[in-house]
Image 1 (cartoon, rainbow, N blue to C red):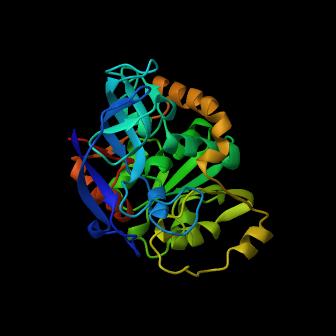
Image 2 (image 1 turned 45 degrees about the vertical axis):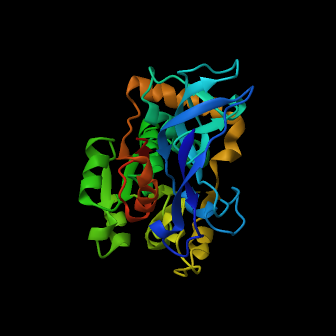
Image 3 (image 1 turned 120 degrees about the horizontal axis):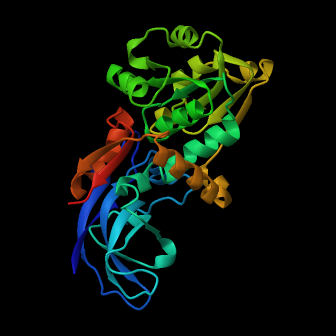
Length: 333
């Protein structure tokens, strides 16, 4: 059968563009014993994928030029030659950007789309939810009355991290890029306050006004000038959860700004960076908590869904201009 793929045409320099991606057609061979044929339903696009487009060595293997992009995908089994999966089963896994693909069940996880909507298995019940859980629960460790500040708060991780802090009894302020997103954080997700960093000329002072007792936990998804302003408001023995630096991912040189280390030193701040795979042996624990909170309504979620396989590159690029509310997904044709 003939399928379509989207391959990495060239490595981006700075912000990715449509020129860095190329659609291709290929003939997919028939499946053999132990394999399944999959038709993707939803594709996840995530900021970490920008690092994999670079040739610089990182925690995840880089994408190869002229080979398909790989990412989180929910798919349906349309043919099976494996006893582990049947035709009609829904699965999640790391799959190529392709209209159909062949995989072995050991690389897939069967999911129940009657229990939760299929997109949740790419967001709140997969990598973004797990990232928020371990970052907040293990590194942030919020207790009742703590003040929590979250950058990139309207993104896939930030929304969950803020609600987990609220579940733990904290006071939560989110930083995001529009008044509409601020309203969403307050009204839909229970944040106590939200700051539109694009609408303020003095972010450091606005954080101080919204967090009058100082910041006990800073959950950083953004970096750059936003983090400079947040660090100025950290309390003694506060916790700095270093989750992401999306404002820096397209930089062609390392940015410089205020020296943060003296502040961290004099205020005895604990700073810890992490990636979610650090906690892979505890994913079942986290999933149990997350599914429980989603089931009882304590944890809500939202996605931005772009229609059409060919729109995958544009959806990915949209992550870097704040196009998404919550998780960014592409729904297959």
